[in-house]
Amino acid sequence: MRIAVSVCVALMACSKPSPAPTVSNKPAADTTEARSYMLGRGVPRDYRIAAKLYGESCASGCGDIALCRPYLEMVMRSRGVLATEEHMKLAARMCDHGEKQACLIAGQAGLRSLDFTQKSNAAKCDSGELAACELDLTLNGAYPRESSEHESRRFKLSTDLCLSGKAAWCVASIHHQWRRCDAETGQPCIDKQPKDSPIREAWKRVQAECAEGDADACEQVPGKAVARMTLCEAGDFGVCDQLENEPRAKEILCAAGRLDKCDPPTKDYVSPARSFSTVVHGSDERCKQGDQEMCATHAKLTTVSSCK
Image (tube, rainbow, N blue to C red; front, top):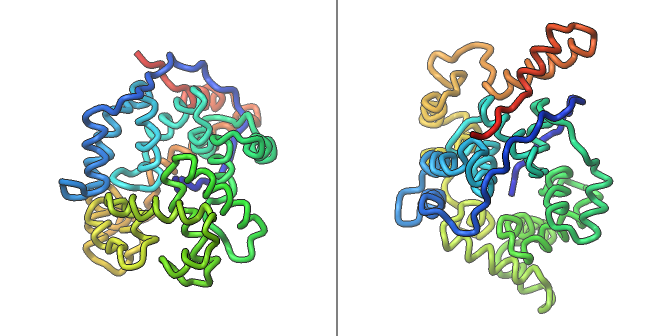
């Protein structure tokens, strides 16, 4: 998972949790269909359709919580959908039901406070709690930075998570490995590793995911990367945003609601999610200064309605 967020937490009490959503152990039909659109397997790759299908199953956090996870990840990566106020409230609802990754997003928006620290979470990870290890990577960045003292830890965590069955972390593990091979990638790098090295299994899993059509996995397989414009056309708005000199990318972003990319562009455009977060943090600050009207506004903004 590549949800990378900077956490800006406003201290506040969480609202009363809504009734627990369902968790299905059996994939729904539209889940299989959503994944097919994600991968371009049997149908053209289209992140917009995939996001719609996941969103319908998630039902704003009142449906299948297991399907809210891939949906929220798509939101935060701008894959097929752009973040709005409702998505921030979805994160808050998921946070209320113990989804720590969602708590980070809700915290950034000012909707929830965190009941853990990086240190306390790292201790849980070190004791073998896999969910805490995923959160550790999100808090500290899953991908290495130059001269980072945490690089070895991130490499080990992502590899361990990969081998535990969490395929999304295999991509991060292999990304680390290519750096360790001094930019030599693919099988030649893997062949230099010890025969019992877990990275060999991680590499097999990345290749298998790529064969299924996973664009993130294919990015790590030499010669298999999906063209960036192809991903943009499929609705990966995060990729479109990086293609600043491509008129078609701007057209796609404009159609999706990025008014700053239209011709002519809307000046001083602020995304709906960021605008909402600014209002939430602003009302909180003014409430702390004694503005009772702003306290009422803040309470209203941060209240997430119960599931019916």
